[in-house]
Image 1 (spheres, rainbow, N blue to C red):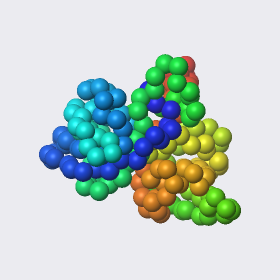
Image 2 (cartoon, rainbow, N blue to C red):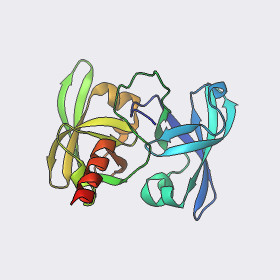
Image 3 (cartoon, one colour):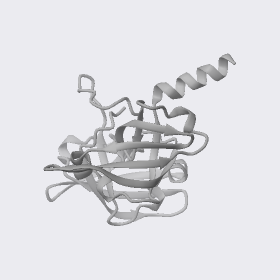
Image 4 (tube, helix red, strand yellow):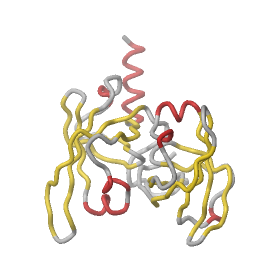
Length: 206
């Protein structure tokens, strides 16, 4: 379980294998001694398992395996050497829940259709992103509700059919990969856990 609060931005250093299984090595600033073999790490949204951890300069390199389901539903299959990804360690009991409950189970891909500057001040410019959700997922996205995009917990500002918008403050743009995002980019989308179960319950009752 995660909160959608990014704690590091990692860089892919190698991708091995093809087909339905790939091993991806990621450089991060995490202390290698703090990562147990088999630990769960959210990598730009998907929850992946650390299958190896090695010390490296200013941090570590950990490897994860991505199988067919992950490759089919997420952007992981497009990662190459140099790809930067948002990272979050799994939530511990007693940790502050600063975002919202995130499982790391990606539901689909959202596409950025527009990026516009909203305000600018001494701390930088805020940016509004308008995205298109897959038609099967749009019913789970509500104004003032939460979504997780590329591992980042965000509040939905507006919804119109399959389009929705989120606002990124300068701090978030600086400490995540959002500053690099452009029109046409696809992002890993996880809808709110409560919305998903509420919709399922309503369907069952109907």
